[in-house]
Amino acid sequence: MIATKFDDVSIFPTFIITPLTYLGGVFYSIHSLPDSWRNLSRFNPILYMVDGFRYGFYGFSDVNIGVSITALVFLMAILTAVNLFFLEKGVGLKN
Image (cartoon, rainbow, N blue to C red; front, side):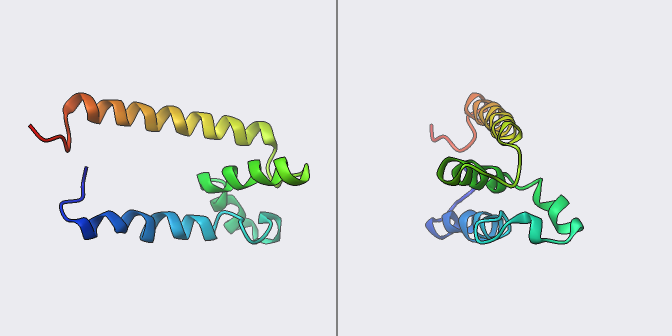
């Protein structure tokens, strides 16, 4: 919706998704982080997705699995509402 050129499409994955992935506990446990970074990581939705996979594969996770599921459902509801709002307004749609 925001991209005006084909090159603008790669901005979101490059500058948003990739850093969130590296800071989301993919390669390490968040328990190894200092308290300030651990608390900041709890606002990262990638952390909850990674913990869901970790719990599914290994049977343990850094965050309670109920908290992970609740956070992801809450985020999904918010993003669905935002998308429906933009669809209703017609943002980015051609006439």
